[in-house]
Image 1 (cartoon, rainbow, N blue to C red):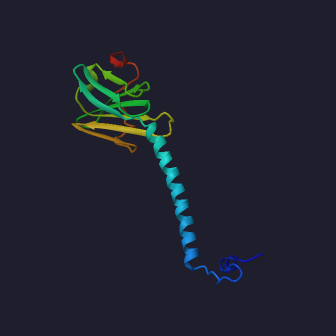
Image 2: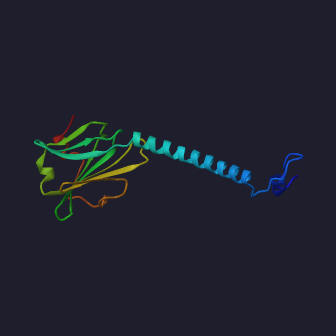
Image 3: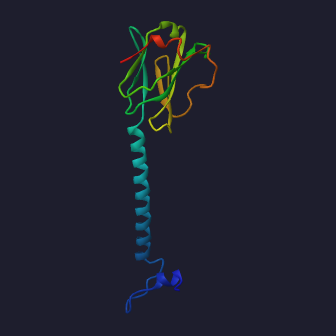
Length: 171
């Protein structure tokens, strides 16, 4: 067995010896490092591309009939939980919604749900169920994140699965 140091010093018969710190070896090592880094970057970009292609984004807006949520992202929003906070940051309503498909609008026609609303929020997952997203609308500001934007575990004054669902319309 030939030690690695001797392999680096091996050269063709009649040629001058090549040492580990010679330009040929340094360039070869740099090329190998660049190839490994490019492969890793390619895999990371493919991962991000898959994630973005499935990412839902729920946006709030107001219509004449009431508040609405529209999925303006690329994938469906699963396990959607809607939150309504009053001006004292107390959770007023917590409503579980069915999945919201791409370009689908969910209209909350019951204005009682939003009485005293100061902050609206949603928590939902992408189609794979692996990534949780959050949206928050406070005043005229809209925030979208994978990180927590409000206390999702607060007890609501009205935890709703059916009380207001007859006032929820989908397009």
